[in-house]
Length: 397
Ligand SMILES: NC(=O)C1=CN([C@@H]2O[C@H](COP(=O)(O)OP(=O)(O)OC[C@H]3O[C@@H](n4cnc5c(N)ncnc54)[C@H](O)[C@@H]3O)[C@@H](O)[C@H]2O)C=CC1
Ligand SMILES: O=C(O)C(=O)COP(=O)(O)O
Image (cartoon, rainbow, N blue to C red):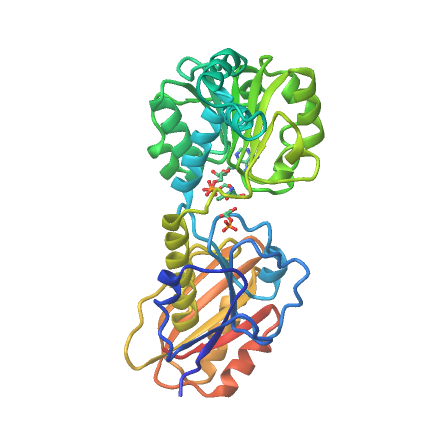
């Protein structure tokens, strides 16, 4: 009997994704203590005691800063994410953020509500106060203004192209832009080669980078000071990418006009020039469906076939299944003679290899191997005994 894999969900995952799982092979629950896989969105896994049973973690979304990615790599546990699946949702919220800031919409709507709810105005009195008060919310238009986009990945490219189509001058900065994203980027977007230049030339800055050591505090006091007075910072990446204290000081001094962000803090959320949303970037039904479908498909492909697609800590490795073969998935340290030792064990067991792929990424590597016929259980133990092999699995189809 092939195994039924226990998948523990730590956040609400769209049923459109979950319903793709064959219930004969997958058992879904929120309370397992020995899951084979974890499926989550933003739940924090950093203090999670990783059980020996765990084979994989799938993040229905983009950011993986809530997951101990390196630690899991060292245990031979791939972490998957869903690149691009929620990018349009974030792009639309960023465009809304540009307009919220440029037209002072948040305060303007509050003002109107206050006239009726608090001041109890109506009829001609209300009309009069509306016309008298509106000038304090007069804004500015986007065409001709410059938007600096930091990070030209799935989201950054969509934001850059949309802002450009709205008549903005768009600058982009991403020293590691992929060829795929460069092809998608509007040719009118100007690439700048230093983040300092981007700040100095931008009326709006929008952030679309992961939260990693290199991006922590990327928006600093010094960089904000180099922006034109009255600029706007939009942060739909992660709170830690911005030095919030510096932003609040710049809002107080008038150097910044507004800070629109998706990551509430006790101090920031109540500042009058800050517009904070409750981490809403990916919260559309479309994005939730897209992320769930992609995460579930990648996870089930790994559990059933050992294939790795869109992992953030292991390389892309996928092979079609062939009849009358047994598949092994092996995680090992990326060091010399691993392939030699693995194939020697297979040869000594008299096994004929029909397909073999080994790819490395950073300190670790992954091997998928198909051999003719059945494989004895002891073979897995022999492979695990090789110095540098972290984990080995006989994958039943
Ligand atoms: N507010 C929300 O609900 C959401 C937030 N996010 C955040 O947005 C981030 C980006 O998402 P995607 O665009 O889908 O990821 P992505 O991986 O497609 O793009 C990230 C880009 O940032 C670039 N980058 C990395 N370090 C950089 C640096 N120091 N300077 C400039 N560029 C740098 C990379 O080269 C890559 O092109 C996620 O990691 C996540 O933190 C993503 C989705 C929803
Ligand atoms: O995909 C991301 O990085 C996000 O921030 C979305 O988070 P969520 O899935 O809405 O908890």
